[in-house]
Length: 78
Image (cartoon, one colour):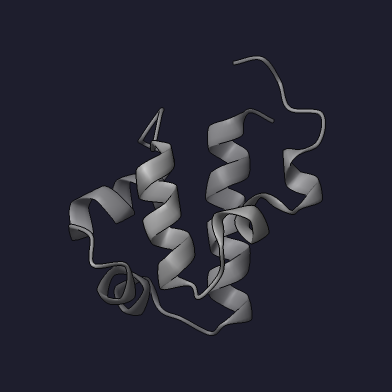
């Protein structure tokens, strides 16, 4: 798994835990819907740390908590 796939899975995992719809997440992040949807669909090859931080904040967690997951262990170089 690469970093983009792990990031996408982590967002979905956290969103489901909080029972947030995609639209609720978009609203809470304050980001353009197209940007969030692109990240969630895996179309964004590099979502950027600033966007990930905004998503983490929209989920009510810190960036450190976002990356505190086994999903980010042993990532492929791609």
